Amino acid sequence: MVAVRTCVACRQRAERAELLRVVLRGGRLMVDERAVLPGRGAWVHPTRRCLELAVSRGSFARALRASGKPDASPLENRLKTLMDN
Image 1 (tube, rainbow, N blue to C red):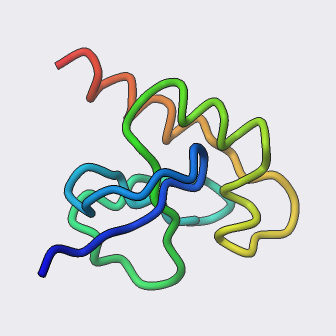
Image 2: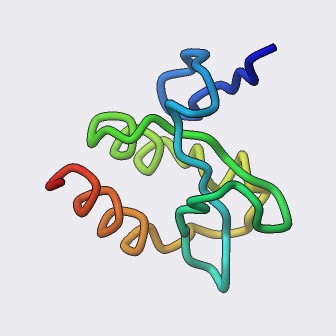
């Protein structure tokens, strides 16, 4: 059986391998490469569109139950690296 998750931005369901798990560490959004870090995680497609949609709608803060607006710059930098390769 294949694990299925829902993207917090576009709400499309996809296999876990197609999405990035994002966690909150010290008020910053970080990519959990191996999906093993403790705590709540939010899943998002590794695309600029989904990332921008999730940040603008506050989807990460809601999914991760964070108060305030988390810093998305580490996540944006990591996504840019992934897209450049």
